[in-house]
Image (cartoon, rainbow, N blue to C red; front, side):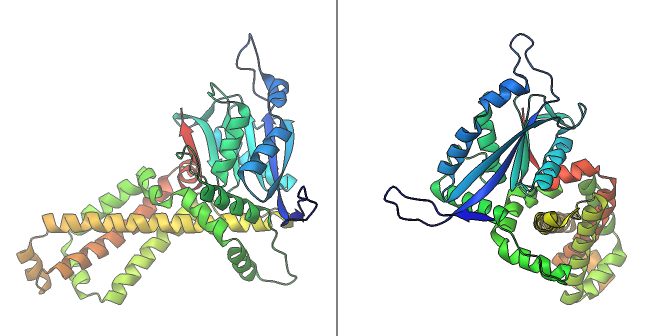
Length: 373
């Protein structure tokens, strides 16, 4: 992190400002969109006045001194999708030790069946914006994506001053450096990073919208529902749920959530390793935020499956038959225990569905956001 005093007109020094390095990549590989009046990288670079962008960002985010580093280069391969371009942008950011990065391209951003105006990952502090049929200037598009990276809700037309201040604090933590201590364990370093970047990590998790993860992974959800339907009508499980203590039921839930979390993180290669020492802090922040995002998302899945199981139990499990099989009266407590147990097994079943999910679908659901055209 680099700080310097900002001078006032009266000559007195105010509080030091934090310098934030923004990497701006112009895609030189895309063909001009309009053969009659082509933009091309050179014309696009002329439209992206780095001094004007830095002044705008300085005005929008108080206490920050923005340094915009403009680079023109080939951004991936012609057939790369939006996630590929985002990964290229993030790799370039790590190589150059930028605090955040935005790539600008004139080609469409395609992800699966969708064409997007931008692909943004607050956890990676990176974004890609397409000017293909854009209804705003390149400067406005970059400014908007920077705000999205810093946690501003893109659905809010005019962010409040409090939102801007929160985004500025987010940027300060991106620019702050956590010293590396000789002989320190990875767990100790991660704990120090988590303590110093708590606001950044929590903001990243919120921006990832973990409560939507379960609903976007259709294979996992389908497998979980199928598992729940099969186990709900198994009388042996009625006996187990009736006999299990609250501690045992809690362990079932914890094992279920942990199993699916590990399956998603490992199966989709969401856990990253730094390639060099300078990347260690950013990668640690990303890994912590990703783990929390998946954990919360799977926790929400577990609660949803438990509620679905409770509804199914009330509809399908006859109270007299339940009492005859288990020897326990079919009270609300027994129905809730059965629903919790079945929901836990269904959650574990979703781990099988997670193995069938495409890695890009999982990554897209967990930590990237994009607006479709």
